[in-house]
Image (cartoon, rainbow, N blue to C red):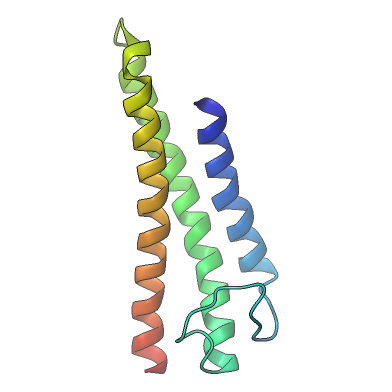
Length: 115
């Protein structure tokens, strides 16, 4: 369970760092944040890829803090093992929510800025 938490947190942070510092330069279908709005123009592509990197990094930090808080909360319970399945589900669900929020926010900004 802990390795899953560490892996997902590192995944968000590493992908975020890569996209933020070295986003894909040209529109392509293999690598980058690809959506109908982000691929409309080079300017939209650059904006989207840089922003998604920043959002993933922020989400990674918030996600890590939230999961540590949940683990500390449940760690005080004497029968911690019986809650491991629920905690694992919360970890996965939190990861999906983080990515979903990042994409929703970015798509809103793309729509506002590029139509």
